[in-house]
Image 1 (cartoon, rainbow, N blue to C red):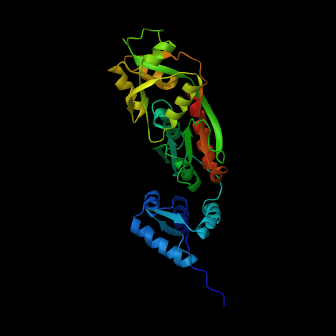
Image 2 (cartoon, helix red, strand yellow):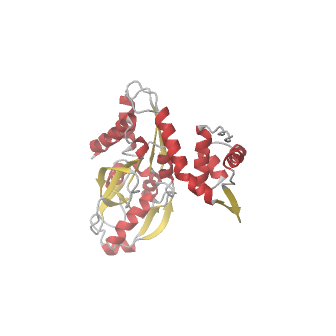
Image 3 (cartoon, rainbow, N blue to C red):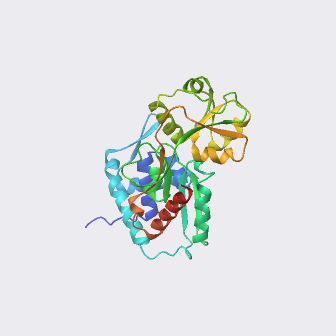
Length: 306
């Protein structure tokens, strides 16, 4: 007589997928918003159901068993199938929708791009909710898109992830932002002055903007001596007002703060390629009407700013 199929609901499958991709009970609990004991109980159930330990300890780490590695794709496909059954593509009306949307962005977009998105979103979808989160570190946004916890990601990577859908939004060039009265006179930011100046840099936990800008500066042969670092872009202009630091950033960001604070914009002393902003999304939401609407809204916001 065949062995009866054990009861495995969608939540347990999602827990299994997260355990397989994270390889950690604590990180799985954090990602799913559950307690570690609850995830440990789920792991015991999964071990009983599969007849395999799934995760085994190796020193201070947990490693996937060979059988667990073979489960990653089937579980992902099963979750995608459940999502299609429970959330079929159908008519979407933003004017009446109460859907919750999540977009992940770096904080340097918060002063000029994010407000434009928020304005359009609530004008078109007054009953829906929008959650904007900081861009997740070390590829975390890819997991968020894959699992459906994120609808869109906006950023300016040198090489966006190949397996995600991508759309260009707008370009922005690099400039320098310094205080009015800086020892470097207007128009006096030469290559030599740039290399000898004290520079401010922002090192966020995503390292996205820093990496992109640093790469472009390297290609242009510009060297900067960074003497001060900050964790958030929006702190930088206020540090510039009270120092002789030089901050290399995008023109849109610099222009916003030059209009608010006693700061001025200086051109880079070398030609660099513009930075290109993208929106990324996963194939699982590519055909969803709600996702199409959200992507169109973000693109329209970018076009209006450009």
